[in-house]
Image 1: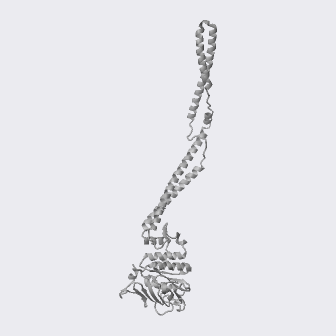
Image 2: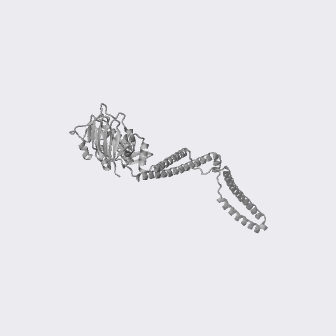
Image 3: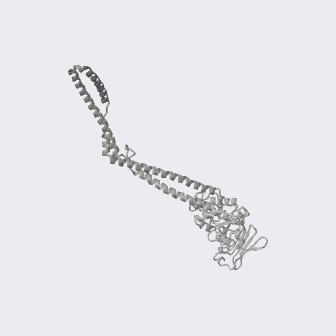
Length: 429
């Protein structure tokens, strides 16, 4: 599909213009130079009025002091001739076959923003992003991903706050070393004490048994002395008792009494001990909760990054009108910068690319006030336009060699000054 460009224009008595003829370069940059107030912007206003209709009609279209009404004559690359002339400056459009047309015919290939680039540049960053998304056709999916991203980010933020609070709470809680993990029962301590006392009592009983056996032996020995006739039996009893005595002595030597001091100490301090144990349990629980929420936070981080990657992939797969353009958080970005972070030159480049993409049949864009670009940036901009096959007619407060024509007091300077022939050759400077 061929794009439509401006092949030539003739202007008379429009705003500050006395008479201007111009053949813009078919692609690239055609700069209209001159000092302030000489009629440069009037050229762009006249083109916009001719092609955009009465909504672009200047409030005072006729040059002040002129008795002749405005006249505009444009020839387009598709063969159409567009004229506004006479007292009412009525629109006349003639196709190559000589048939007449009107504004509806022009609207098929003339984009409003191509005639009014400042309107796009003054729109909000979100409106610019919406325009770009409409061009590349991924707006609905990107909105869904951004909604999911905001929801995950909010959820992760909340989980992260809870995890931080739990971790901080756990660190502020006391912790005691050398205490059991579970609270101590007074009943269990008393039971253990009673068990030890029972063992000690049995030991004491065995000791008394030793003493008793010793006494029996003595009495039996006396009986042996007195009762000679019972000597044999007494000797047997003596041997038996001696054997038992030896065994009892050995048992008694191996006995060890157990101390209840620690249990008695624990019983005295059981309340304080259990306070420490519960404090340790509470801290352990808080740390576990912090780990739980941290794990949720990490999981949401992975999901959030997956959504963001899908957004990047979606935009990377779209055919963008300018490399480096993107949409982040619903706002237009270029080379990673939002609109207010871009240079004036980048803003012009971005605006021109997007406006051109809105209607691919419109092969030209009007740009006012290019003086914000230095010569290197201007040269790069012109090269990019040439590469894109896009025609830009622009104004610049300058009389330098970059200007295709220079306007002074509403008319072109004499031919010996930098004039139209320089720019008509190839749009170079």
